[in-house]
Structures are given as structure tokens and as C-alpha cells.
Amino acid sequence: MERHILVVLPHPDDEAFSLSGTLAKHIEAGSPVTYACLTLGEMGRNMGNPPFTNRVELPGIRKQELEESCAAIGIQDLRLLGYHDKTVEFEDTALLDGNIAAILDEVKPSLVYTFYPGYSVHPDHDATGAAVVRTVGRLPEDERPTVRCMAFSRDHELAIGRPDVISDVKGFLKQKMGAIRAHRSQFHGVIGSNSLTDREMQERFGTERFWTYRFN
Image (cartoon, rainbow, N blue to C red; front, top):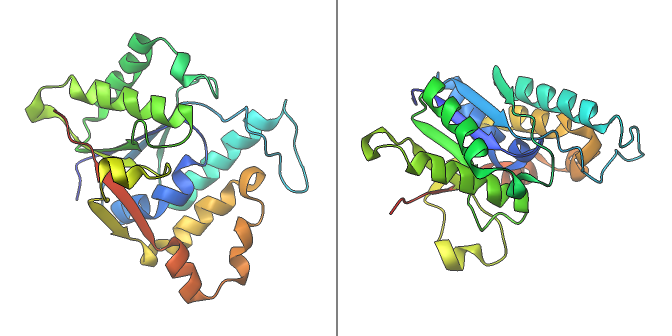
């Protein structure tokens, strides 16, 4: 059991496919989870299929969807940090790092989840992961939590190797699918998962992979 887990991601829905089963597993084991989400994903292009929202209403919709996803997973401490979607890389580094440092100081996690900087496709993903790594890296070595990262850019394993943490979440697919389906504006229909057999569901969604960040 971890003392406390901190998740730092930039968008609502970032948690759903890659992390939700693992978080549900931690929560069942008794570890409290704090999820700091930097933006409301207000620049997302998806509005549902068929569309049921618009650019003006999308931030509120995505906030509701994130809250539903957290409820499905079992997360009780959600922090919305108020940054703007698709601009995290341009934010004042000192202020961004300071906000993350304040949460680290408050909850004192033993484990942090974020994106692997440079290997996570979206500029917001990479910038968020870089901020977490910078901030944790400034802590005294004996006070640093473990940082586990998600990565999925093309050929990322050639650069950073194979994942060193492979989480079997087959027993937590109810929570994971609840988290995915909560983001209705983005995933509309859960990419056909209703037609999948139990075995196909387990093969497709039952494993989550992480890289432990190695500080120099």
C-alpha cells in the first residue's frame, strides 16, 4: 500500500485508458489518491457523436465528465488547477512548478503518476510530465516519491526501453470502463467495446504499463 498517490495530468480523460484500472487497484488496497488535472480540455475537437455540446459549453461538460470518471474509479480528491488547454508548454515554469510543489508538500505522496516527458505525443502531456519531473527532482533524494510515467509515442521503447511496471487490471475493468464511458463527449460509444467478448475486453483493456523515471 502506498502512503499517498498523486496523479498529475493535463486533460480530463487522460486518466481513463492508461491509468484508471491501476488507480482503482491502489484505492482498493487502501491508498488515497489525489488527482491534479491542469486544464478542462476546452480546446478538444470532439463534441460527442452525434454532437451534443458546443465550444462554449464544452469546458463545463468536460468537468462533469471528469468528476464522473473519478467517481467510477473511486478518486475522492480531485484538484482542478485552472490552466488553459493546449498552452501548458507556454506557462510560466516557476508558477507551474510552484503549484505542483505545493501539492507535493501538502499530500506528501510516496508515488506520483504523470506522462513521460518527450514520449507522450501531445505537447501538454510532455510539458506536464516535464514539470512534475523538474519539481520532484528538486526535492532531497531521500524525500522524493517514486515517479511512474505513461509513454506511447512512436518508437518510444527504442529510447526509454520497455516498461518496468506492468499492471494487471483485469479485476478492475468495471471501474476502468466506467471511467472511459464517463467521457461521453470524447469517446462516444467506447470504441465499440459493447460488442467485445469478455476475453477481448481483458486483452484490450486489462493491462496498463508504466516507466519509472530515473533521476540522474
